[in-house]
Structure formats: C-alpha cells, structure tokens
Image (cartoon, rainbow, N blue to C red):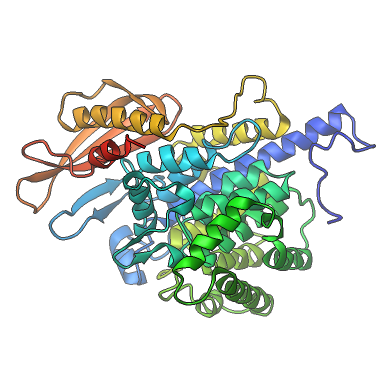
Length: 496
C-alpha cells in the first residue's frame, strides 16, 4: 500500500537515525493507543452488555446513553450460587484480562508461546476471571483436567462443543499478536490461528481473529487512510490468510483431528462457508455505511443468537470504525450503546482499531486516566514495542522446551496459597507470589452471602507489583472446601 509507513526498516535508502527514531515513536504511540483504547472500549461497554432496552440502562445508570465509566452491580452466578458484586468505574472485563495474558506469552523474539498460555496463563485466569464466557472457561478447565496436549483439546461438555465454538473469545485477546507482528505478516497469521484454536474450533472464531489481527496490523502502518484500500485488503485477507499455514505440520494434525468426528462437514468445507459469510458482510458494509447502524447489525446477525460470533462482531466493529472515522470516539460510544449486542467486545474492537490508526490522540484523555491498570497496559505496550525494535533480546531466553509437568506443579503450589487466602490464613496487607503475575499485596477481602446453605463467596483483591489488579473469587463451604479449586484435577495430571 502506497500510504503505509515503512516501519523500522533500516534498509530504507532515504532513512537516517532521526527518521527511524521518529517512525519508532509513531509506532510506539499507535501500539499504546491500540491497547489502551481497546481496554477503554471494554470498560465502557461491559456495563451495557446485558441491557436490552434503554429503559433498563436508564434505571441502572440514570441515563439512556453512556459516554463515560459508571459504577455498577453485576449479578454473578445462578439462583443458589449467585451474588452481587460492585464493579468500580473504569473496570475492564475478561476481554482485557486475556489480552494481557496473551501479551505475557510473547517472547523477546515476538513469538507467541502457546504452551505458556494454554498451560499457565489460561488455567490461572479462572481464579480471577471477570465476565468470562462459558466456552473459554470450559476450555481452560478441560486443559487442566485432560492429559491431551492443547492442540488436541477437542472438548465437548454439555451444549458446548469445541468444533462449533465460533464466538469472539479468540479475536478479543489477539491484539498483542497483531501489534508485535507489525513487520511479520506470515507469523501474524500463524500465531493468530494458534491462539484461536487453544479454546475455539469453529472457523468463525478462527477467521474472525485472523481478520481482526490483520486489520490492526494494516492500520499500524497506515499514514493516510483510504476506505477502498482497506476493503480490498480485508477481502484479500479473507481469501488468503490461511495460505501460509499449509506448510505447518501441526495445522495438518489439528485439521485431521477436527475432521475425525465432524458431523456437519469437514473443516475445509466449513471454513469456506465462513469465508463466504465474511465476504458477504464486507460487500454489504460498503452500501450500508450511510444507513442506520442497526441495519448492518441486523444483517450480520449481531443482535440474535450469533451476537457473539467471531465474524459478526469483527465486521460490525469495522463498520463503526469506518463510519465514524472523523470522530472515532463516537464509534466507540455507538458500540457501547447498541443494546442487545456484545457491547464490550465490539467496543473493545473499535477502540483497538482507532488506537492502531490514530494513536493515543484517538479519544478523550479522561477515559485513560480513569481506566483500571492504565499504567500496566501502557507498560505492556512499551514492551511489545521493545520486542519489535529488538531491545528485549539482550536478556531474553525463549522457552524452547516447555515443561508442562513443571508448570502444573507451579499452579498446584499456587493453589495452596490460594486456599490460605480463602481460609483467612492471609490478611489485608499480606504478600503473595503468583506464578504469572509475580509479587502482590492483598488490598481487600470481602465475604458475600449466597442462598446455597453452608457456603459463602469470598472475594480477595490483590494489587501486583507489575501493575495489574485482580479479584480472586470462590465459593467456600463452612468446612473450608474451595469450590473453584483446581487442585484435584492438577494432582491427577502431575503424572504426565
């Protein structure tokens, strides 16, 4: 593309050290913008995710249209296990939590370490997840429970079937992979695919993640945006994004397993159907940019049972980004207030797109200042930039042979500390060590009553030295049983 920046290319004949420094600063600003505004969209859209009517939103928040963070209450769990949790303004959900977890799994060479994410970050996330979907939580628990490698995690539990898990849980966490691969499109597609299939097996989830990651990658390098060029690029990605995957043996192994017990067609056939769906949404986008936003949402089925589809949500995010390009803040607010849709994830996607193109100047700075863990998110962005420039290589040793058993032992050791927190052996102000997040301090402990006799819910908020805050949670019985514990499954798997 003629208007794309030649980012950090030291072979550019017209470049000098000053130009490279300026280009590097532009890229850093865009990476920061993408990560921060993705989290902003998530935090703005989370309160409206389950509000179907303006009257309900007004009753909860005193206004029909949200343009700022709000403090709110979320009901967590069912009738007997449920409790109400107060969510502070600016708090983000599982979308951002898992984005940060993926970022921690990118090594100094820019490679996504899938083993680390699948066997360490994902199981540990279950202890502190906020708003996590059934599919991802099921995938995480199956990985802990099963002795199969993550590549063959073809789970089926109740109504959840891996092969038909096509929601946006893969796309919502792929942003760090898109950012760090600004100069490596081939690895971008490979790692986006790899990231997706750890938890989701349907092409809607996989292709949605690859398309969104590619769009972010494109916008990072774009200096003068042209809608027609963007359309053509996305069309090309839909058609060719998997071409570079054919040379990978692990992809062949995975597709063979996918086809083994497939019911409604082989993977290749279902993937082509999904491609056609994506092309239809792209073509419709061009002619519907001038109509009411809801019309495009309806066309992509972003309001019905497919509202969390990895394809639908990505394309409505593209639609809002393009339509409100002159005022990107409005695009995010539209996503936040499109009730009946997956508001937090779509707003997160729009925020990521806006940040990748405009950088930190995309929207109101007040929304950054009140965002949960903003300094940590900016630090992660800086680390991704340092990976691109090679600054992290000096002291980095990549994981070449990941030891799953050793990782399980680390998580099991952490479970002991987790039990101590829930058993009140640790108090506010005490220090803990987390296998992924490092040292942290307990800053709040809270007990919530639930209807289930003999149980309470305990919430423990921890501020980690790295900059992330997490609220660990579990139902705890009167005899000390921690219901969300992974200890039993971990103990079984130690024999791997």
